[in-house]
Each structure stands twice: as C-alpha cells, then as structure tokens.
Image 1 (cartoon, rainbow, N blue to C red):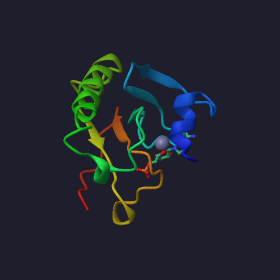
Image 2 (cartoon, protein in one colour; image 1 turned 60 degrees about the vertical axis):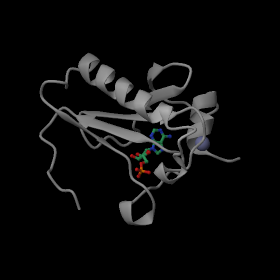
Image 3 (cartoon, rainbow, N blue to C red; image 1 turned 180 degrees about the horizontal axis):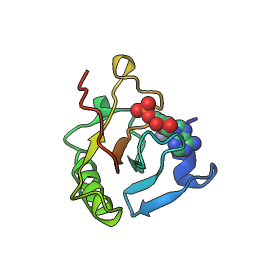
Image 4 (cartoon, rainbow, N blue to C red; image 1 turned 120 degrees about the vertical axis):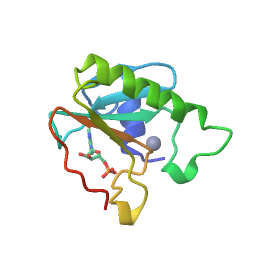
Length: 113
Ligand code: AMP
Ligand code: ZN
C-alpha cells in the first residue's frame, strides 16, 4: 500500500523524530502552523478516525498519553496546547493515515469551524 506516513514509519522517507515506541511514532510537521507542531501517529495503518474500532482503539488512548508526555517535554503543558485530528474532506484531511496534530507554543486561534 502506498502511504506517506507508513513510509515515514519504515524510514523510507525522512522525518524529524520526536518520539517512538512499539505502537506510536511522532515527528515534526513539515509545514508547522505553530512553534510546536508535532504529528503523532499509530504504527498500524488506519486511514482516519473512521477506522477506529473496539479492537484497535487502545492505541488512541496511548496517543493521548504520548501527547501529554510530549507537551510536558516540549514546555507547553502549562501554557496550553491543542490536539486535533482532521477526518475526511470537510475537515481538510490531506494524508489518509490517522494522525493527531499537537499544536502549541503560541496563543492558538479559537476557531472550531
Ligand atoms: P492533515 O491536513 O490533517 O491531513 O495533516 C497532514 C499534515 O501532514 C500537514 O500538516 C502536513 O504539513 C503534514 N505533512 C505532509 N507531508 C509531511 C512530511 N513528509 N513530513 C512531515 N509532515 C508532513
Ligand atoms: Zn499508512
């Protein structure tokens, strides 16, 4: 399967790794929208939130644990941050391997839609 983020996990495409364990990989977004902009992804290929099921949802809870850990390490846990996952066309999803944006380091715009 041809997937950009699967290729990044495999190391076939370079990335700036921030964190890795058995089930999760995190790396700097190539086009940062904030001083801290990290993408946290499951190693298993899920296309979007639509693919989350009771069988695979444990990795989502783990991604939030990793987000909290990275927010602390990157110095934004007190100032605040946002974790966002875009799903599908109307949300502007461009890469169809489930990912969570960790954004912080400045006052983020308060726009839900
Ligand atoms: P989304 O629009 O929610 O699907 O987010 C996809 C994100 O992937 C965007 O913020 C892109 O800047 C980012 N992105 C695309 N290609 C790469 C890459 N090779 N390395 C790091 N981030 C990337
Ligand atoms: Zn993938």
